[in-house]
Length: 153
Image 1 (cartoon, one colour):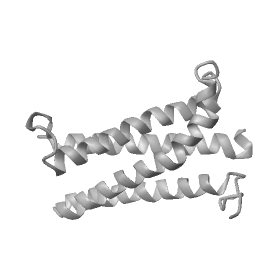
Image 2 (cartoon, helix red, strand yellow):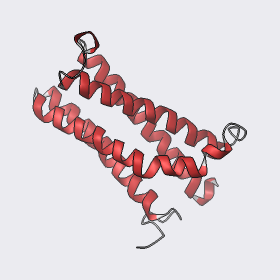
Image 3 (cartoon, one colour):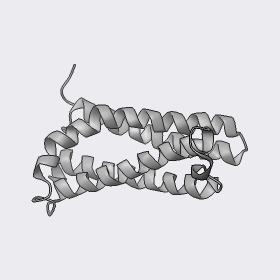
């Protein structure tokens, strides 16, 4: 398996694949939003839930190990450097977005949570999580650029 990625940045293949999948999932979330607007709620639920679950896998397999190896040992003493600050902000916001996505999926799509924890205003929660998710995605892109694009290193 090649060590170099396909985006021509010097990033490892795993980083390029992760970035490409994350952006594809971002677009998929927007398509899922369109499904809801067209009142295709079952397809919307499957679409959004699938992205949340796949994102959880990518976080567990690619992002957590990378963060623990490259960033966490330098926190908090090097948070004044963009390399560590961006990655830490991305991890924090991404964790919040993933937790929010899991909560929405459980609270809106199942009866697993107690009645008092279920959603009543779906739109606000779903839109808020979508905005968080895209902010985390953009921070992830900024992190990728800072880590792997020579002009920004």
